[in-house]
Length: 424
Ligand code: GDP
Ligand code: IMO
Ligand code: MG
Image (cartoon, rainbow, N blue to C red):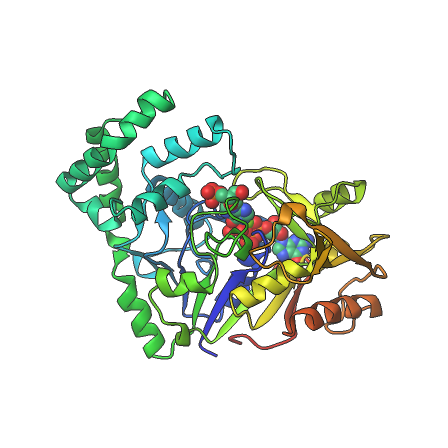
């Protein structure tokens, strides 16, 4: 196996960062292909907690090259702060961190728009406020600033002036918001361009060469399938293609290049932001899971909503991204609970559905639960689990018909069992 995709199989925060970091030690390249600094990928190294937003989660391994491909929306100021933090932990030279010259730049205007829409609009998505949606809007509308534009002050000023033709109206007449002039924003971005220059290249060729040469390439997804702009629970989604399809457009490889798609799934489910969540737990046990699992957003610090494992969602995610195996994370959080439930289907308008097909209105779904025997497990022996935990894993495997290849039972690097070989 030379290529592997990491795909979030729920509503994000499944533990992608931890799994990418662990597999990244065997990879030549780790590539981010979509999203931006809305992502928060946590890696625990000893007593240090490192949260990555834009920089790929392979960066902590010295021989691994981290690539930010053209499908990403890139925020220069946040990137520089993140790079400084990473450099406190490991040496990063520009040859080990590559940014696509065609990635889309998140400008101050995008952040103002995001914040004001969320603050003032009647329909709230619960965005991270990082300007993600507005930046992708400009990309699709063919007026985005690309990384390569940062090296030319005139191009920057012309493009930003053009962008302001419509946005100034919104800032002044709809949102009553302050905003910088095109000249000031151009000067600010140009300065970042000068600092970033040495990291920028044509990442399409870089990845193409790597895959041709049989290098080990890991594609690190951000968010999760249910937040995908096309496959997700629209409109409560992010603005990018978070599934496997995002790799093809966002990194520039064809589907045949990606051998294995590893879906990351939490042993329960969480969601931050607005939108329906059929298995959300209203009772006290939901608060317990939230506390034991430390379920707070790694980007915004918001409390994550918690629910029982939702098999219709997982089945859908597996279909939507042709996921070939799963990493089941945070199993430890469920250990010792006196009650355990799994949703195997929904009832909607008197009909039963065992897959969360996109035509279904999740806000109308009544989850149908199977109560299963709880387990207590110390995870000391790989593969030798309490019968009830083995049954829990089997229940998941049987529902989706693919294996659980990885079991994560704690935030630390050592707290993992590999049931299948990936890259090693
Ligand atoms: P990501 O966005 O998918 O990378 O996930 P986040 O980093 O936002 O959230 C996952 C959280 O769970 C982080 O705080 C991780 O350190 C932590 N974590 C990852 N795997 C496990 C696990 O198996 N058990 C426990 N208890 N925590 C884990
Ligand atoms: P990682 O990669 C969880 C959610 C936001 C909001 C919606 C849209 O850490 O799993 P956006 O700012 O993207 O326009 O917000 O998407 N969201 C995430 N939820 N994990 C993430 O990333 C997320 N990135 C965005 O909470 O509901
Ligand atoms: Mg996260």
